[in-house]
Image 1: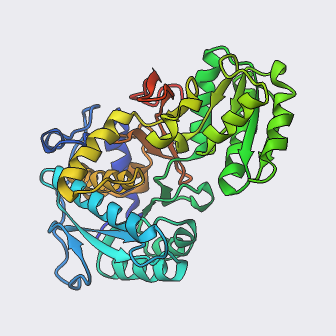
Image 2: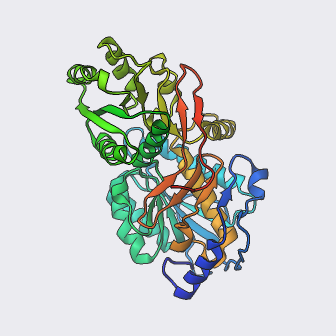
Image 3: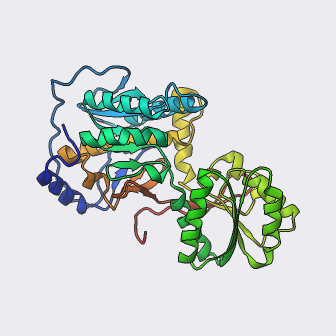
Length: 405
């Protein structure tokens, strides 16, 4: 059974095999495309996949697939609120990914993480005991924190669906969309477009704190002067808007990462801010037609994976399950396709850290270019879109390789 850090010679061999490629293409979206999945760099040799050990116990609970390599999938199936519906969507997306990958040699062990750390830890322990070589999930940061020591002790890597960089560490990777990555690519494009000074209206809370930290770090890097940052709660928004409006002559951009940005912009306009001159900038939370199609946001820019990939995924999901998927469900699809691809192409080195954290990364047909860093965080190649009141306009396509990152 493959384990992180098992055999140093095997690890070095894996590094040699993967250093010569440019990217591993995970061509999601059609079974025909996935059948041709292959590295683009060439020179890679493959090792045979060892059959599953006969001593492994019979899996408990739901399984998807019948392959030789076992993969744990931790989802909050019995959690409160909307989490259970998200778990269903992610479970379905994982199944769809396995269907789309022709010749996948994995069995997915679906475990209930419960939405809490202790339940997630128990689920991880069970998946590992049943032979899981890698864990996909869980979703929530508290779950990941308690899964991490269990997986680490067993040498099993984790591809979590969290977006909290605080839970990342070597061997515990984040698949979620990180706000600092979004801010960096958005400001790079805004700077190229001539933006030189800006303000920000950022809602209080964990996401807002991360967004503000990213903005303060990235703005100087791209030659952008940060005039002011106003944090707001629901009640003091008018006062914060007035403070920004008072300095409107000094700025040519306003960063509003919250998905309630349309309401904020309407107040800015009422306070005298000309959003035809001052560019409104958003975040990946805007990647929702209910947000970016709002007429109040016309002309605003936001980062996102290229939307066509999600649209294709949505059509396939709708045809298979008769419902609309959440964007987060794509992470489960991509994780399963990545696991199946590495099993097929990397042989016995499939889940080594040197393979998972290949700096040249991977490409998914759903969310595009991504890679895991050695510290467990990720980078994604994002597109920049302009809101139009309907379908967004592509300002800058997503990169296809990590050149200049």
